[in-house]
Length: 310
Image 1 (cartoon, rainbow, N blue to C red):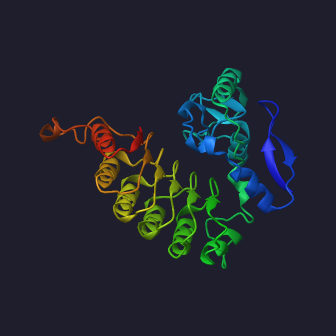
Image 2: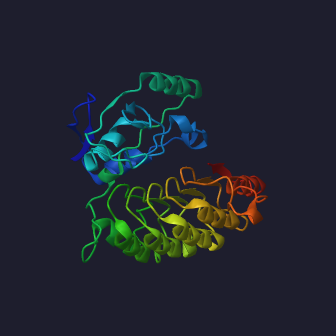
Image 3: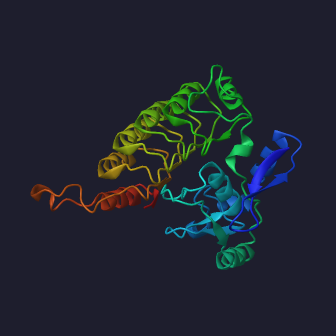
């Protein structure tokens, strides 16, 4: 039995249990997506910013961000950091609360009905991990790490969101990934990864032949981390989607990513919003006529037919 946290009101987080006999049963549930779902373009406003999947029970977080989340995902995030807005990273004096977003839920239901959308919701990533890791990644490593090292052909998706990996954990993961030939989808969001961890992940990405989707948003990889990923994009031939939201990559990091878009052969979708991109590369007199980094990204993405989310 695996526990999933939920809540019936905005003041109290209570535990409910969802029963699954085996991890394989749970994985089959999550992977039960129809071809219709894969082909359908879900509006960004209907996606939970934590899972990036369509919301089924949206709730509104009572902070300045006014962001809505899938309830079960938000509660998991608040369980780890009850006073922190998981979208902005801002900390508050009191525990955060939330309320049902009924108007958004109605809009989503109408959209689902119109498009005959019947896919099941994606549960929080923690329930997919047999053994929770920590920043040190103990000797021998957790079960998921051992499966990557063993090149387990059944492990094609790995959900490590909000697991406090840190740079050491990211480096251990990257070492294991360097010889893995089956992993296709990797969630690394909200893991306190800096440019050092990003560099390690980028090195593994540069040689990967199977990884198609990488979620690394809401860390702090900075410009240097973005440059490492940009370098990897130039040689990688498998990655199709990259999520880089809220990583403080700045104009320098975004410029490196933009340059990589000119040569990447596989990337189809790039999510890069929330990264403090200024209107111009520089405020010096010599650079007054320089185009904005956003304009550069848009121009290159359009020319290469890459979906860009700023």
